[in-house]
Length: 337
Ligand code: NDP
Image 1: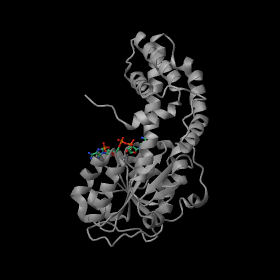
Image 2 (image 1 turned 180 degrees about the vertical axis):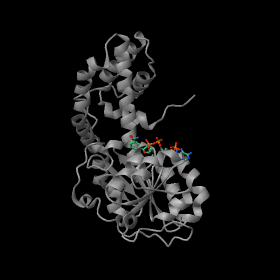
Image 3 (image 1 turned 60 degrees about the vertical axis):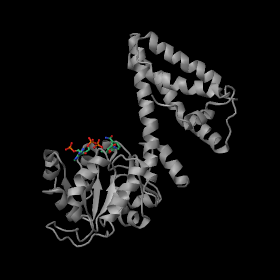
Image 4 (image 1 turned 135 degrees about the vertical axis):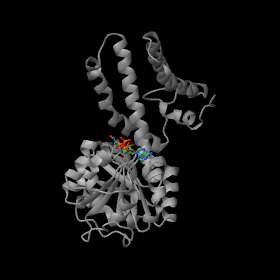
């Protein structure tokens, strides 16, 4: 995992512009390793511009639409069949079964809630897996993706784990990015087709890399967004609305890229000097957030968790160091009840 990974995960949704090799997005898909179809599918499109999309939630639907817009022959399947209706009206082919959907194309894009959904769909259809390449753009853990890649290999399929930092409206545009990990040759064979979904990157051969970067992004995303919602709930308890605090929220949110670059450089240098911030200051500040929540009758669980982390830093004697020294407290998970 090199520098490209660090820059990829840090850019977040909406940041990516197509550069370099990404510019091939939308070019005809390279011929995949798809073996001849033996069980009733239509077989890979001779020109290679064909794809199967399994899972038609907001993301899968956006992906199928993007492929259709680029002239791909698209086969779709979804557990709840009616979600395919408008895609079929737009030119997609509805597979009658997962097995038929797999058989139709060498490249199979998965967009499902989680790994359990993938196994639920694919286990009964493993006979159609040989020769397929599964590009899984569903959320997963690094270990889960490694196990899924090994499972796919046992069934004769290639596996690319992916993370996608794009919202459904951004799919099929230059905004956002999708990053893949798994065998480079599989990625290169399908780079063009995958580039239809989002600008692409390959992070490395270890299937766990893309899910790791995705969970890095989601850790910040969900923790940050829940923090925002908590803050707004606290303001509302005082009769102040989300729109009224928005300028102050945006001040903090807007400062984050600079703050993150500053502290990332310091982390890389192993520098926890308390010249800009000190854990003792952070602990007092975090205590005020928790106190404000309690006083407003708002659930203090989130600020209490932050405060507890600062307090462990204090207890370890790091009061005069920067909050980045809290990594030591974060590495040593507190005992769970
Ligand atoms: P949804 O959860 O709304 O839909 C996912 C799909 O999974 C649906 O087609 C659903 O089928 C299917 N599914 C879930 N469980 C099962 C099961 N047990 N068996 C069969 N099918 C199942 O997800 P999204 O489309 O929003 O997202 C897809 C993936 O993309 C997720 O992993 C998400 O984390 C990720 N993602 C989402 C983004 C977003 O903004 N929405 C942005 C970036 C990534 P059915 O329709 O029958 O319920």
